[in-house]
Image 1 (cartoon, rainbow, N blue to C red):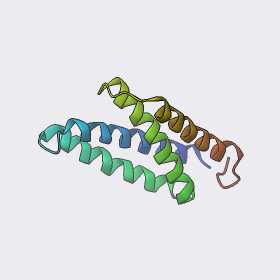
Image 2: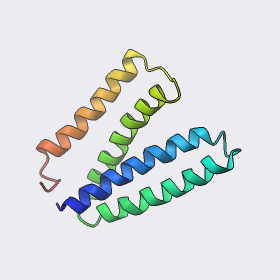
Image 3: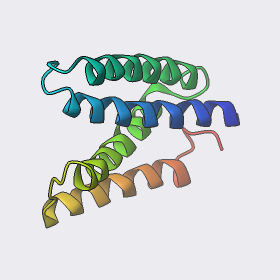
Length: 112
């Protein structure tokens, strides 16, 4: 798998996390700039995801994209929006990270 594929996927993840953060800041689409930023971030995230899908199977790309997105947006929620995570939530997030690691380190589906 080319570095471009991984860069596109990581960019898609970052933009999805930024878009979701802006969705929270948009206050249900009542604030124009966060709403516009959210739309741009989501659009670019899906574009970069489509680039990653040129070489990566959709199920694997989506598992990595959504799994890391969930973990990162939970971290943003904790730090930026002061949302608390209880122990079961932290355990669940750790399992998501474990799943992404298993896919990337041991699966033959992802080309290394």
